[in-house]
Image (cartoon, rainbow, N blue to C red):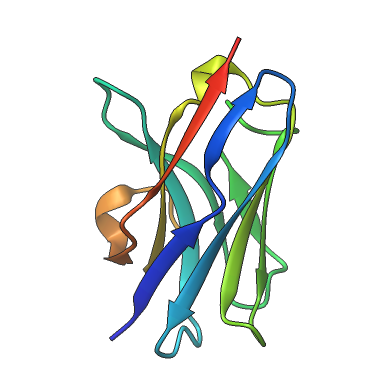
Length: 121
């Protein structure tokens, strides 16, 4: 069993940066980790994913070049570094763990409760 707790969200202005953290309890050994987001009135969408050894990552086109996913296995923590934030990045951000390296929401087994990110223009 894996429990995930996100932190680091908040209210920022366009162009600002934030770092989201996802602390895992229970072993995440060999799990792929992902970040997803759900904007108001929209479906949950993929943001980024990373493999266990952190040498493979995926980023959605909408965040490529601005967001970076990273993980520290010694701390059992995954991060999402978000730069050049835009109002359209406003959403609840969720951390997830799964056994498949994919952008597909349904492939992830464990989910956190989410952290709100609001970007004002």
